[in-house]
Length: 88
Image (cartoon, rainbow, N blue to C red; front, top):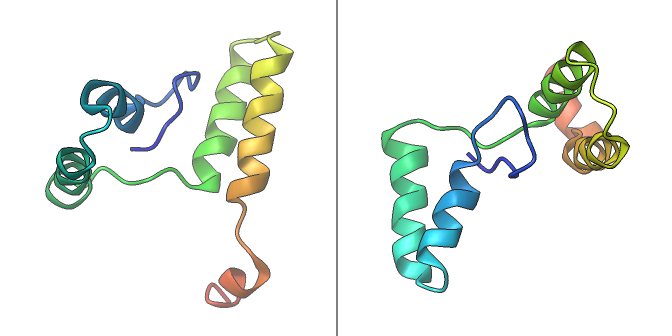
């Protein structure tokens, strides 16, 4: 749901609606709630960034700024050690 405009394998639903609603925060929150709760569109996780990097590799992407941005997003989204404990 919160994909960035430069993602190639996911649609940036959040970003698109943010540009439409702009500063109408209440309306935007309603739309986000509808997308997340009613339609079940999930937020991006670290696994989505890995999938994006794999996609870029398959497509032989040479846009190093784009690739670097994905690695930075992956680093920011990676699970913390205490999150990993619940998976053991």
